[in-house]
Amino acid sequence: MIDRIITSGTFSLDGGTWDVDNNVWLVGDAREVVVIDAAHDAAAIAERVGGRTVAAIVCTHAHNDHINAARDLAALTGAPIRLHPADQVLWEQVYGPEVTYEPLADGEKLLTGGVALQILHTPGHSPGAVCAYAPELGAVFSGDTLFKGGPGATGRSYSSFETIIESIRERLLTLPPETVVHTGHGDSTAIGAEAPHLEEWISRGH
Image (cartoon, rainbow, N blue to C red; front, top):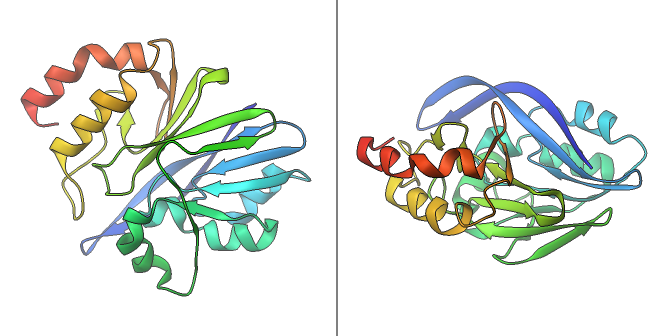
């Protein structure tokens, strides 16, 4: 039901560029999947998809390292690209107005391979950041909103520490504690493992 591909490339914003490894998640069954965060290497992602239908390419946010393979993957698979429109300014930094996507809405449910993914708008890392919650799988795909050890970075343009803390508190830490958190980079964690540290993150302005 859940598969991970790790792809490598660069993240660029505010004049800086950094090497990054990204988690690309495939959620579905033997016939159909949703791809979460098409990063860096469309061919490698398409190879892992194989002969399955891609119902959607979901972007948890529009930083370049999470969307830079979306256009090519859409061309290879015929799948629609889905993004929250509050990240339009970041999207245009990568693709301009020529490449379009279908807007994601808070509370929307995407169905793929017998799995329902509920979209949770979790701004902070970026204005249009979302997480995708799959209650039947006991998992949430958090993009760069929540990691093992704390919130995503908020030190660059279009981000806010106060906003990401509110998103995590109100939208993620209210999920069942056993919910597995599949992140945009690095290792997975669980809601129950991260919840006790919220006040610590706030105190140190993580």
